[in-house]
Length: 81
Image (cartoon, rainbow, N blue to C red):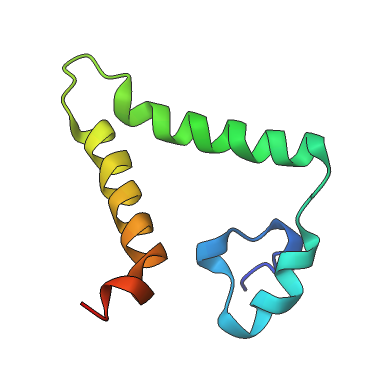
């Protein structure tokens, strides 16, 4: 028998599309909650950078995300060219 996980404790990849509108307001939007989210993201990202035999994989991921973000942001102007 599967145990039922409360919606608040589910991760993004475990949330179904129909549950998403009720899951987002459960986030902690206080300054402490936002700082905790940035801290968790930093630690999850840092494991790609802090390795014994490092490469450019972590930095290239950030640069690729930056490029995609800027392309999406300026798509309206670019599609007219």
